[in-house]
Image (cartoon, rainbow, N blue to C red; front, top):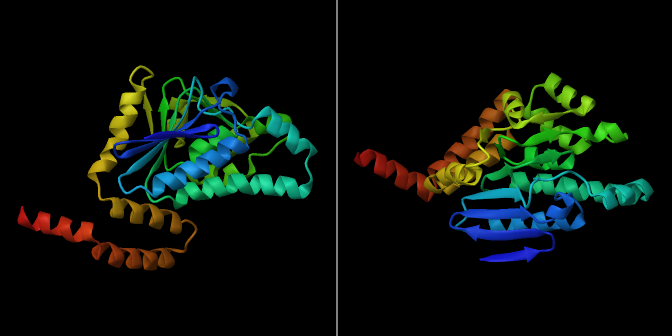
Length: 255
Protein backbone atom coordinates (compact mmCIF):
# COMPACT_ATOMS: atom_id res chain seq x y z
CA UNK A 1 0.00 0.00 0.00
CA UNK A 2 1.48 3.35 -0.96
CA UNK A 3 0.32 6.82 -1.83
CA UNK A 4 1.72 10.30 -2.24
CA UNK A 5 0.45 13.23 -0.21
CA UNK A 6 1.94 16.31 -1.82
CA UNK A 7 5.70 16.12 -1.13
CA UNK A 8 5.51 13.21 1.33
CA UNK A 9 5.35 9.50 0.52
CA UNK A 10 3.55 7.06 2.80
CA UNK A 11 3.63 3.27 2.75
CA UNK A 12 2.98 0.41 5.16
CA UNK A 13 5.54 -2.39 5.06
CA UNK A 14 4.44 -5.12 7.45
CA UNK A 15 4.49 -3.58 10.93
CA UNK A 16 6.46 -0.51 9.78
CA UNK A 17 4.88 2.68 8.45
CA UNK A 18 7.37 4.44 6.19
CA UNK A 19 7.13 8.21 5.77
CA UNK A 20 9.51 9.73 3.24
CA UNK A 21 10.18 13.42 2.65
CA UNK A 22 10.10 13.51 -1.12
CA UNK A 23 11.75 16.71 -2.35
CA UNK A 24 15.26 15.40 -3.03
CA UNK A 25 15.97 18.17 -5.53
CA UNK A 26 15.46 20.65 -2.65
CA UNK A 27 17.28 18.49 -0.09
CA UNK A 28 13.84 17.78 1.39
CA UNK A 29 13.60 21.34 2.70
CA UNK A 30 10.59 22.05 4.89
CA UNK A 31 7.63 23.86 3.36
CA UNK A 32 3.87 23.79 3.86
CA UNK A 33 3.54 20.68 1.68
CA UNK A 34 6.12 18.73 3.67
CA UNK A 35 4.73 19.77 7.05
CA UNK A 36 1.12 19.10 6.05
CA UNK A 37 2.05 15.79 4.44
CA UNK A 38 3.92 14.67 7.55
CA UNK A 39 0.92 15.40 9.75
CA UNK A 40 -1.43 13.49 7.43
CA UNK A 41 0.94 10.52 7.23
CA UNK A 42 1.47 10.37 10.99
CA UNK A 43 -2.26 10.38 11.62
CA UNK A 44 -2.84 7.68 8.99
CA UNK A 45 -0.06 5.50 10.44
CA UNK A 46 -1.47 5.90 13.95
CA UNK A 47 -4.88 4.70 12.78
CA UNK A 48 -3.52 1.40 11.44
CA UNK A 49 -3.69 -1.49 13.93
CA UNK A 50 -0.88 -3.37 12.18
CA UNK A 51 1.65 -0.55 12.60
CA UNK A 52 4.16 -0.96 15.44
CA UNK A 53 6.65 1.73 14.43
CA UNK A 54 6.97 4.70 12.08
CA UNK A 55 10.20 5.42 10.20
CA UNK A 56 10.73 8.94 8.86
CA UNK A 57 13.43 9.35 6.21
CA UNK A 58 14.41 11.60 3.33
CA UNK A 59 14.53 10.76 -0.36
CA UNK A 60 17.88 11.26 -2.05
CA UNK A 61 21.11 12.16 -0.29
CA UNK A 62 19.77 14.20 2.64
CA UNK A 63 17.26 13.82 5.45
CA UNK A 64 16.17 17.49 5.56
CA UNK A 65 18.17 20.68 5.07
CA UNK A 66 15.82 22.94 7.03
CA UNK A 67 13.41 25.59 5.78
CA UNK A 68 12.78 26.03 2.08
CA UNK A 69 14.27 29.20 0.55
CA UNK A 70 10.84 30.38 -0.57
CA UNK A 71 9.56 29.80 2.97
CA UNK A 72 12.42 31.88 4.36
CA UNK A 73 11.60 34.64 1.91
CA UNK A 74 7.96 34.57 2.98
CA UNK A 75 8.95 34.73 6.66
CA UNK A 76 10.90 37.93 6.09
CA UNK A 77 7.89 39.62 4.47
CA UNK A 78 5.03 38.13 6.53
CA UNK A 79 2.95 39.91 9.15
CA UNK A 80 3.06 38.96 12.83
CA UNK A 81 -0.17 36.96 12.57
CA UNK A 82 1.08 35.11 9.48
CA UNK A 83 4.36 34.22 11.18
CA UNK A 84 2.48 33.03 14.27
CA UNK A 85 0.29 30.75 12.15
CA UNK A 86 3.34 29.39 10.31
CA UNK A 87 5.26 28.72 13.53
CA UNK A 88 2.26 27.06 15.15
CA UNK A 89 1.89 24.71 12.20
CA UNK A 90 5.40 23.39 12.87
CA UNK A 91 4.67 23.22 16.60
CA UNK A 92 1.63 21.06 15.82
CA UNK A 93 3.87 18.63 13.92
CA UNK A 94 6.29 18.30 16.84
CA UNK A 95 3.38 17.81 19.24
CA UNK A 96 1.76 15.20 17.01
CA UNK A 97 4.93 13.10 16.97
CA UNK A 98 4.64 12.73 20.73
CA UNK A 99 0.90 12.05 20.58
CA UNK A 100 1.24 9.18 18.10
CA UNK A 101 0.97 5.93 20.07
CA UNK A 102 3.83 4.02 18.41
CA UNK A 103 7.55 4.92 18.30
CA UNK A 104 8.44 7.48 15.62
CA UNK A 105 11.99 6.88 14.38
CA UNK A 106 14.09 9.30 12.34
CA UNK A 107 16.39 7.45 9.91
CA UNK A 108 18.95 10.10 8.99
CA UNK A 109 21.18 9.92 5.94
CA UNK A 110 23.13 12.96 4.83
CA UNK A 111 22.30 16.31 6.37
CA UNK A 112 19.72 17.09 9.03
CA UNK A 113 20.11 20.83 9.54
CA UNK A 114 18.11 23.60 11.22
CA UNK A 115 14.43 22.60 11.13
CA UNK A 116 15.51 19.26 9.68
CA UNK A 117 17.65 18.61 12.74
CA UNK A 118 14.71 19.72 14.85
CA UNK A 119 12.43 17.27 13.04
CA UNK A 120 14.87 14.43 13.66
CA UNK A 121 15.31 15.24 17.35
CA UNK A 122 11.52 15.60 17.75
CA UNK A 123 11.19 11.91 16.87
CA UNK A 124 11.21 9.38 19.70
CA UNK A 125 14.37 7.73 18.40
CA UNK A 126 17.11 8.86 16.00
CA UNK A 127 19.16 6.44 13.89
CA UNK A 128 22.01 7.91 11.85
CA UNK A 129 24.14 6.70 8.98
CA UNK A 130 27.86 7.10 9.68
CA UNK A 131 28.10 9.94 7.15
CA UNK A 132 25.11 11.87 8.58
CA UNK A 133 25.55 15.49 9.64
CA UNK A 134 23.52 17.40 12.23
CA UNK A 135 23.39 21.08 13.12
CA UNK A 136 21.44 24.20 14.06
CA UNK A 137 22.90 26.96 11.85
CA UNK A 138 19.97 29.38 12.33
CA UNK A 139 22.05 31.94 14.24
CA UNK A 140 24.15 32.50 11.12
CA UNK A 141 21.21 34.32 9.50
CA UNK A 142 19.93 35.98 12.66
CA UNK A 143 17.25 33.37 13.29
CA UNK A 144 16.62 31.36 16.47
CA UNK A 145 15.92 27.59 16.64
CA UNK A 146 13.21 28.48 19.12
CA UNK A 147 10.72 25.61 19.14
CA UNK A 148 13.27 22.89 18.50
CA UNK A 149 15.22 24.26 21.48
CA UNK A 150 12.49 22.89 23.75
CA UNK A 151 13.17 19.45 22.27
CA UNK A 152 16.96 19.76 22.15
CA UNK A 153 17.09 20.84 25.80
CA UNK A 154 15.41 17.56 26.74
CA UNK A 155 17.77 15.49 24.57
CA UNK A 156 21.17 16.79 25.66
CA UNK A 157 22.79 18.55 28.65
CA UNK A 158 22.35 22.31 28.92
CA UNK A 159 25.90 23.27 27.95
CA UNK A 160 25.83 20.99 24.91
CA UNK A 161 22.52 22.54 23.83
CA UNK A 162 23.97 26.03 24.29
CA UNK A 163 26.98 25.11 22.17
CA UNK A 164 24.88 23.69 19.35
CA UNK A 165 22.41 26.56 19.10
CA UNK A 166 24.85 29.47 19.47
CA UNK A 167 27.83 28.28 17.42
CA UNK A 168 25.85 26.91 14.48
CA UNK A 169 28.36 24.13 13.80
CA UNK A 170 27.70 20.84 12.03
CA UNK A 171 28.51 17.62 13.88
CA UNK A 172 28.84 14.02 12.73
CA UNK A 173 26.48 11.20 13.59
CA UNK A 174 29.04 9.79 16.02
CA UNK A 175 29.42 13.16 17.77
CA UNK A 176 25.64 13.46 17.94
CA UNK A 177 25.44 10.01 19.55
CA UNK A 178 28.06 10.95 22.12
CA UNK A 179 26.02 14.04 22.99
CA UNK A 180 22.79 12.07 23.33
CA UNK A 181 21.10 13.48 20.22
CA UNK A 182 21.29 10.14 18.35
CA UNK A 183 20.49 6.64 19.61
CA UNK A 184 22.51 4.53 17.18
CA UNK A 185 24.94 5.05 14.30
CA UNK A 186 25.03 2.46 11.52
CA UNK A 187 27.28 1.95 8.51
CA UNK A 188 26.17 3.69 5.33
CA UNK A 189 26.38 0.40 3.40
CA UNK A 190 24.01 -1.50 5.70
CA UNK A 191 21.94 1.43 6.97
CA UNK A 192 18.55 0.41 5.54
CA UNK A 193 18.86 -3.17 6.80
CA UNK A 194 20.11 -2.03 10.21
CA UNK A 195 17.20 0.40 10.58
CA UNK A 196 14.71 -2.35 9.73
CA UNK A 197 16.32 -4.72 12.23
CA UNK A 198 16.26 -2.04 14.93
CA UNK A 199 12.60 -1.10 14.51
CA UNK A 200 11.63 -4.72 13.89
CA UNK A 201 12.02 -5.31 17.62
CA UNK A 202 8.81 -3.35 18.22
CA UNK A 203 6.87 -6.02 16.32
CA UNK A 204 7.66 -8.43 19.16
CA UNK A 205 6.61 -6.03 21.92
CA UNK A 206 3.17 -5.34 23.36
CA UNK A 207 1.72 -2.44 21.38
CA UNK A 208 -0.38 -1.28 24.32
CA UNK A 209 2.59 -1.41 26.71
CA UNK A 210 4.78 0.60 24.32
CA UNK A 211 1.99 3.17 23.85
CA UNK A 212 1.42 3.52 27.59
CA UNK A 213 5.16 3.78 28.21
CA UNK A 214 5.59 6.48 25.55
CA UNK A 215 2.68 8.51 26.86
CA UNK A 216 3.81 8.28 30.49
CA UNK A 217 7.43 9.15 29.72
CA UNK A 218 6.45 12.42 28.06
CA UNK A 219 3.68 13.13 30.56
CA UNK A 220 6.23 12.94 33.40
CA UNK A 221 8.38 15.62 31.77
CA UNK A 222 8.54 18.55 34.18
CA UNK A 223 6.47 16.86 36.89
CA UNK A 224 7.48 16.92 40.53
CA UNK A 225 8.72 13.55 41.84
CA UNK A 226 5.55 12.71 43.77
CA UNK A 227 3.28 13.74 40.88
CA UNK A 228 5.30 11.54 38.54
CA UNK A 229 4.85 8.59 40.89
CA UNK A 230 1.10 9.25 41.06
CA UNK A 231 0.93 9.21 37.26
CA UNK A 232 2.90 5.98 37.35
CA UNK A 233 0.30 4.46 39.66
CA UNK A 234 -2.48 5.34 37.22
CA UNK A 235 -0.67 3.86 34.21
CA UNK A 236 0.40 0.81 36.23
CA UNK A 237 -3.26 0.03 36.95
CA UNK A 238 -4.29 0.64 33.33
CA UNK A 239 -1.51 -1.67 32.09
CA UNK A 240 -2.61 -4.46 34.43
CA UNK A 241 -6.07 -4.39 32.89
CA UNK A 242 -4.94 -4.64 29.26
CA UNK A 243 -5.38 -7.86 27.30
CA UNK A 244 -1.65 -7.88 26.43
CA UNK A 245 -0.63 -7.78 30.08
CA UNK A 246 -3.08 -10.44 31.20
CA UNK A 247 -1.99 -12.77 28.41
CA UNK A 248 1.66 -12.00 29.08
CA UNK A 249 1.35 -12.85 32.76
CA UNK A 250 -0.46 -16.07 31.92
CA UNK A 251 2.32 -17.12 29.54
CA UNK A 252 4.97 -16.24 32.11
CA UNK A 253 3.28 -18.27 34.85
CA UNK A 254 3.09 -21.33 32.58
CA UNK A 255 6.88 -21.44 32.14
